[in-house]
Length: 471
Image (cartoon, rainbow, N blue to C red):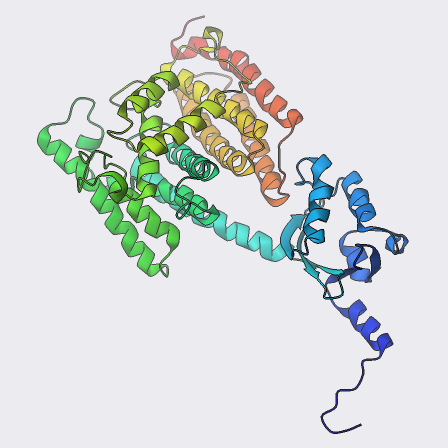
């Protein structure tokens, strides 16, 4: 052998090397027929007798896995396999993650070969995926805690910031579907603006209680002080962004904090910006914040109906709000109100205004969960589950304090029921997040509907005489 010449690789050695790697390997020929695999592939996908697929079309493998319930997030089964095969026939390189029914996360790559075939590789990335998800959730929890610290004096709803974040994300996605602001609105923007909007009013931490909680109209001097929260919040988030290596969501958060009170016609604050000079993130958050504020009870006002809030927003399009963003936002509101699992009735009242309002919010949250399910909108389903966990905990704590002060003898039983529900919803969130379910399913939505309706009409009515509602 001449110097520098590379020896030919023995086929036996190559086969041994392929079997030794920790990645699953599947080889398809130019006709997308299975030509071989290693044992790691069979192990990762839990396929007994995988050799039986050698010499058969890859479609047979997909149909086998689909029938076994392997593809939890495949969507419409009728188009799943044709779309997958069409991408391969177009010689596309495919890279994605998929969660198996057992919770294992596979990093999958399909690379076309010059010979016309394909090589699929499979790697178990469960630990990495879960670690990244934990980082993301911890970051979101920190952001929510910061926001609630500033907001808690101004609202008794507990999850105002989460509802605003959801509306912001839904509106941004609707703008993308409508083909508007294509240079700005991509998947990364939708994700960042949703998280960033949680911090829209973080500057209120600097606003005195005497102003923030004042039930009546603010004086000119008090209003001027109130308006400073926009610049204060932006300054705080810009500083945090520098400390976190120019975090994109904190940068957008600073934009939102500063500009979500600007008006499209220039009559807003703090800088009197007009039209497109207001960052798109600020224009989107302005709508979500106002809608949720209007439809929530505050120390200085009662809650408006959704219809009243929509009328007000429509009237302000082109004046307070960007008319293009307004149309996308109103589409979101129309879509989410098409499905209703539970309807409020006077029979559900426990005789306490605050508890009744909180029950209405719980009912509305579950109805919106069903609406997101009907639209197969997984990101929104995940956000609403977060809201449900947070709001249920808030409501149950408030309710338990109320009935304890009223000396209700069934407090401990009530508390245990509440704890069981929070644990159930928390487990649902874990399963939905880490198993990446596309939908919840009728069984889960039915349980939520029945539990809430029966709890309000049953257990909660038992304490009505103790909280001043009468029998």
